[in-house]
Length: 172
Image 1 (cartoon, rainbow, N blue to C red):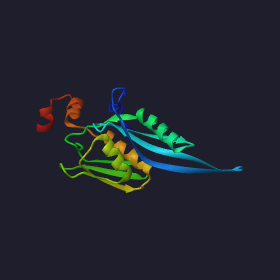
Image 2: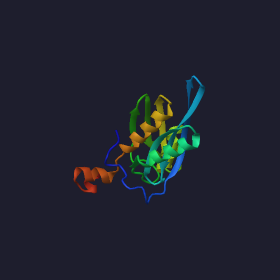
Image 3: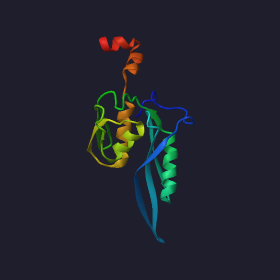
Image 4: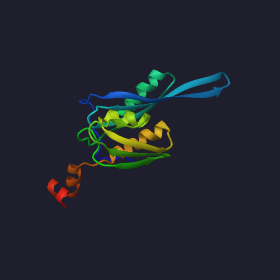
């Protein structure tokens, strides 16, 4: 699903900020009555190219958020962000959610909704045009956005993968 090339190994020296995307209350009906549990989707990022997401489930909202944060810290990827935007257009699909990301000029802002906005702001993108199609399920939107970001490649990565110089990439 996500490139192993973009995985971030050690988290100790990175200052991560967490954003709560959604909290879902789940009810289980038992003989003794209703039991409530909570599922929280959390996105963490350093706003400088590193982002991850996690899902936490617990009997209390705060415990679910904490578990989600810990899961997100184990699931980090590195994204190429240049001048506050993404390097190229990207389309990704996860489950029923489909996302489209497009670079934007300086001053545009983050034109994205809900779950996508949380992921893009956590990674440090300040100018981007984004569209979500299909399902608006926050779980799948977060996963599709992370998938799209993990497939991003900047010119340096392309040159390195091809084994050529950076000028050769642009001049053909």
